[in-house]
Length: 616
Image (cartoon, rainbow, N blue to C red; front, side):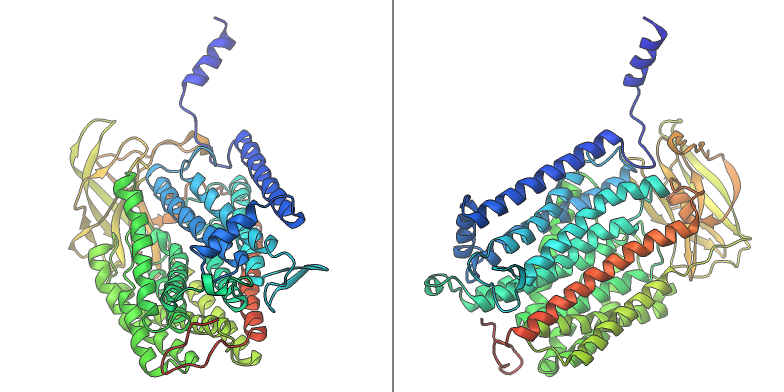
């Protein structure tokens, strides 16, 4: 055999190296071609329906109208069913994918990770649902809020926004590969393009709410009203499920904390929990009616808890903790006993209760359910962040529900409240992003009880920080081992001031990346213990000898070692700003849709007592 032939054989026999700066071009071509083919197929179906050459969509819409979407016209019933199933599929894929990246590290590309398939199917399904809502209305104007497409073609505004949210989420996939090619692999949920995937999917629930309201106002097709009109309890359940879906969508941003590998300060977690609770649960209480907030949390627990069970025990990947939310729902329901007829006040008061009583409940829950429980280090700042998130979310939830029911305050008031809520959330997030890294702190690590050989080595560790007074009651000081086909997160045990030890042995072999993480106030730092060689990024192995002293350094450099260090900072800032602007446009567009529905569709009924009647 020639030298060239031997080289080819050895290359094929060797394990495929995981790229660190974008996927292989063949996978990009296949994925792009598949997406283009599916989009063309969808457009052909839409064109066939509009011209009368294809009747399948009409039959499917009729079935949805008589079944799951009973009481809605076909152009709202079928897209709602498709969107809901797609969202659950995408949710499963997202948590599965996050679990795989935490336990196995980066993958070879979009087609090499099995969890990417349900994500892609789910996100394309959301986009498909929006396109169906736009294409289905034929020979009619789907309600007074509809937008004009051509001279005689009108589309429901909820459908247009649903398609836009789905397209925005799908766009995150190719842009993610471009991002990795420019900046390297950012193994964090909060990468800008990752947030596009999550944000587009989560916010699509607002578009579904708008579509449901448009469909409810339009009613079923002529001659079918008596046959398909659902009972009030069925409409209550459907709206409660959509509100619960919104809670699920807004909660996905917390996933790093759910798995116990957050790469940002712990005060972000109570902020995100309160923001999701305030927005979704206040909207649920006002839009669904009495008990709506509690039902939304029950639905959330069934779906979100079910996904954790499927990804964890069933598939065999990592378990993700589930925030409780029941205390927050109870706060909203109790506040509504007095303030249901004053929705803006209800949103603010509920947010305040969520940020205090809800914060306390989640603090207790974290002690038993989360890998990194909350500590006294975040008590004051965490509660302030939770109050900001709860009040901002509560106001947004109240505006959303009142807009859907045609009762928005005058534009000057509603726009000011919406802008103030967004600004408050942005300020809170920015506050959480302000961190510091020690410049003169070191850690001396001594390994004990070393077990196994090079392929299975584990050990306990004793960590002595210098100076010893640099850490005081930290948010966490923990051992983290990940990406070695598993996850180990264990808080360290304090022996005395500045001295800690592990409670379980650390993995120090194979592909494991093991470090000590320190989060104290605004300090977010780490000490690498063992790092494998990574030829794709030119990184050598960092061994773990019996005893060593290393600098306490930026944990981002350790957790995201694949990031390129030679990219100009202005380029990252400019690219992130583009993603931020696109996200703001999506949020404003959804706000415009709610305002449009409120302005042109009359309120369905006056409130009776503390409850709104759910009628057309």
